[in-house]
Amino acid sequence: MNDNKKINNLKEKLRQALNSTAKVISDDYNVDKNHEENKNTKNFDFINFENLNSKYDFIKARADSDSLALKKKFSDDRIYQKNQPLNTSCKSLYSIAEKIRYESLGCKMLRGIEKNLKENYHQIIEFKKKDQLKTKEDVPVVEAFELYMLKKFHGIKLNSLTNKMLNFWENDFDQVIDKHLKFLKENLENQEKYSLRFSEILQEMEIFQNEENEENEEENQNEDQNN
Image (cartoon, rainbow, N blue to C red):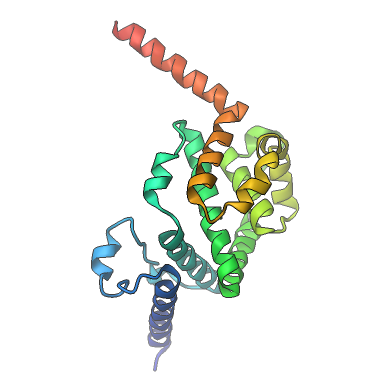
């Protein structure tokens, strides 16, 4: 058996293993049956096994598969859309908050899921590179928020670079989120309460209020020009 055939066999075995695990996690036993149908929908995404070429790719594939299955099991899109903030930047952070919620439930459910997710996040953190970190503008708020959520909800230990990245934003996040942490952690299983509270929190953040005012001013200017 040549090397290419061995690699392809390994990828196929991994695909079968991940799909079997995804069925158990998501309670969806039609994953294989509806493969072609689901592949083109947002209900369930599939890993591209052709791109698996290293240990790091396999770690990512396991974590992504678990995360997608947890989303299917624990995240109700109707509730997600209903409580989604209007501000564009808030939506990005809201999406991260929901991902952390259903992944946290998965970590409580199975230690294997927790291991896969944390291994992948540690890998992501170790691979982060930044040419310069001098001001808050050098760190996108979405990137900092994900680090904040990983630290607060998943207990991920940051390295020196990611700690420095988070430091620019951590006080801003703490001012509006810290007092709600207990409530959020106690309501991980209640998506309605959790997502509504997070939507309210994000819309309270001063950085987004400023942005929203700018968007409103631009809309008003456009209306004046049209008139």
